Length: 319
Length: 179
Image 1 (tube, chains in turn brown, orange):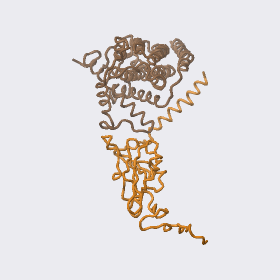
Image 2 (tube, helix red, strand yellow):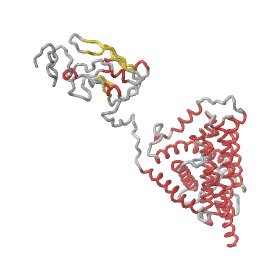
Image 3 (cartoon, helix red, strand yellow):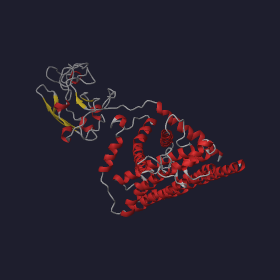
Image 4 (cartoon, chains in turn purple, yellow):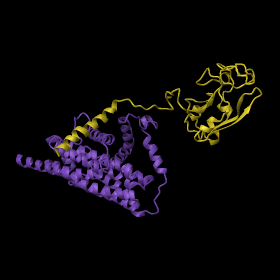
């Protein structure tokens, strides 16, 4: 068994790493948030509180896994499985480093977008099957938000796709090796993708579907135990996914000075974006729901279309 | 649209930077069990009963503290010794009810009941939170070192008659007509 793209070893290592990293983010986020709020954060369990994740896992596994009697059992159980599945599937097309990855799909970008769309089913089913008004409100908000922001997310990537001429994420990185990182020609596309990515992964400031202060955790109000844990880890998996996508699409993936392996540069860039997302959570307050939708349709949509148009004009005029 | 971009740059980005710059500000947290925080002398913590400078109990069992207590956690019974001094027969504070408001200390006319900076009073049994007089009474004078109620009050006790307290006039003889 060799370590190459698509080998069993590669798949196993990537799957394990991604899940462990997502779980560790629980600790990283609490710790970073506390530093930015002049606190210490969890530092009691293990060195620097590193084993906090283990403690959390023990707690979440030994909790009562309760399904409300009024809930629709089948879709209630199905919903958290969907979000984990689709996000883990999205990781299959990410090129982590030369020779590290699950598949080199030539429709990689489309696959990620399709999986992000399927993720909307998870929150919708969770909210509907809970039979709880807060959960229903949360899932309504989530469905509208995810469908709206997927539009700008897709359009903002199209500039990169047009520049590199491929949907294959690995070839997009290779194209950046020749042409330079796409952050420079596609800066507006990057900003829109960043904002849409925050909305897609329900992170603050766009965590309107699960706003604790308004609708008490939204679509996962009724969830407990490991089912809640799957939503929780799923959210962090989404965070890792969006950060890796930004790295691949706009910041040259594994490219970097060659004295360190490519996977290091990939991890470094991705972690920088994860930290940025956590900083967003620490700093920016949540907008109102109608502000979110107005901002999306009346600002991000025209800007992203304009960005695509100008990119197309430039590509055509340079040929 | 231009104002939105301008607002984003001037408001959101500045906010992000200001929050990020807190990374190199030292945390305010005091890691309590490892590191004891400074407790102010007027902190309202565990309640004690103090003694006067002569070493006698200050409490005269007037019940004002029990009346002032908003949660009714103080119970006491008055009794007298052979010298005429009043003192509590029992004095009981239920610390599982006490809210450390300090009203008893304000109500006390003899500075007997006082609150201290100690707050580590956790117990495993609820019954252990009920403190009796021998648990509450300390050997010192607490916050007020010189005050002695019977030396300034007109109450007659053994060894001190009427008119012998500090700044007290000799009692008027009501049966005499002389000025």
